[in-house]
Image (cartoon, rainbow, N blue to C red):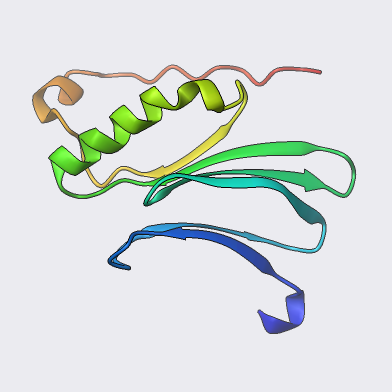
Length: 114
């Protein structure tokens, strides 16, 4: 990848056992990037054609109590996150298996037309 002019923005856990990263090519510029907590970050990228992309990237912990704390952090900090983020996450399993097993469908919103 060294010949492709790739940059990265990373947020790793303190122990180095997990984290989140965004790889971007030269068509993108990092406009904003901040850590919400270890393993969770927010990044705004500006494409050379003028499109702005907001990413919320999370690598949730495999321990349910720590994963729940991460979700609570997201809820507490949600007022800082724009209304249109692209959410990328590794959930590592569910917090309440019996409750989540009862959900039989997923609702997907249609993209907004500008």
